[in-house]
Image (cartoon, rainbow, N blue to C red; front, side, top):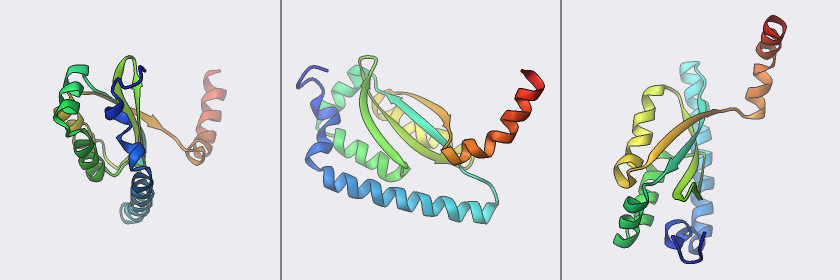
Length: 149
């Protein structure tokens, strides 16, 4: 990335890193508590996904020129309450990776639409597991190995 190129797109967080760190810590704690409460109420688990976002370059430029990038991202993050969010450049485009918890696939449009509408973004959802999830999957992996290997 060239110095100055897109710096306002990603690095507005640097000036407010303590506020953002506090926000993400509080959001994570709230998210985890909500997740545990929902699991107890419904008996269903939460599915964790990596949500990869890639903004259209021209749409991103327009947002930056308008001076509203920080406001837009803060608004979306406050609504979506990701477990974690990281902003980066990938394939020459502005983007980000968030960890989101979903209890039902019907929640996917609500997570993707704000990014589609604000930055003409490409959004991908990639299932992800914690080490604990992978450990729980161990027996089924062993069964598949015995049957198909």
